[in-house]
Amino acid sequence: MRTPFIAGNWKLNKTISEARAFAAEFGPLVQDVTDVQIGLFPVFTSIPALSEALGGSNVEVGGQDFYWKASGAYTGEVSLPLLEDAGAKLVLIGHSERRGRFGVPEPDLEGEAGRVFGETDHSVNKKLLAALGSSLTPIVCVGETLTERQNGHTDAVVENQTVMALDGVEASQVASIVFAYEPVWAIGTGEVCAADEANRVCGVIRATVASKLGAQAGEAVRIQYGGSVKPDNARELLALEHIDGALVGGASLKADSFAQIVQAARG
Ligand code: 13P
Image (cartoon, rainbow, N blue to C red; front, side, top):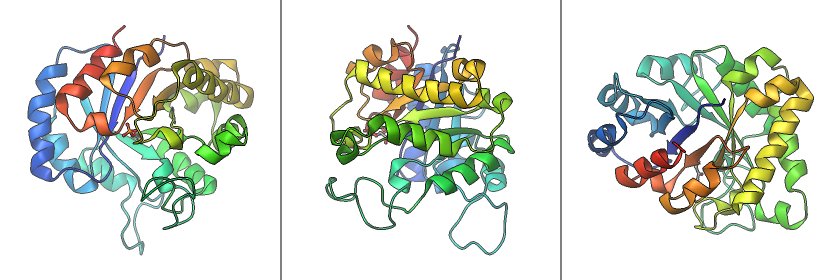
């Protein structure tokens, strides 16, 4: 039985005091929840304050990104040991907003959404291998753009991202990895992927893990869906076979809506 995992990705939002205020409101709403893993990804500057505010609770804090080296001449970066030192227990890897060509949004996406920070499948793999050597639980994000979906490449894109991420990973390590299927076209658009399609693609990720690392690894790996998850669509998504949780953006910024999504994972 895979424990459901609901995580909130705050992206570039909330000051330190806003993060503290969220913790004060959210903590009590979920304090009795023992059957769902709960995580929050604030901006780096809020990690110590949020970890402290939620200390001893059932809500874990994580970093939205990191560099795989521990220290050195890497201006602007943060490392796994520094995230651990700040109180983090989780880390995101390869969110779609971090992938792609640096500073160049995908042509089918408006404004600043999409793959904008130059991350590649190779760097995602380096980060996953580094995270597996740390105390942090990694969530590896995969997903196709609208153009890739329209061209019928969804499964190939997701399979390829999964295989590349797992290069050099042992079967015994997979139980501590979480994948998040986040179709880029469903992120921040209000356009949720149909539940049966989200489940089907999460099944493709599971089958890819199984074919690379064995049936047991495929069974054990947890897979979240992300992309416009809200209190009113969470239950339908989370009831499905291959969807073990959610990676929530906008709806995680408000304590009550994020708590409702946590409740929806309780079955
Ligand atoms: P939204 O829930 O705002 O669509 O964002 C999803 C996401 O990117 C979480 O990582």
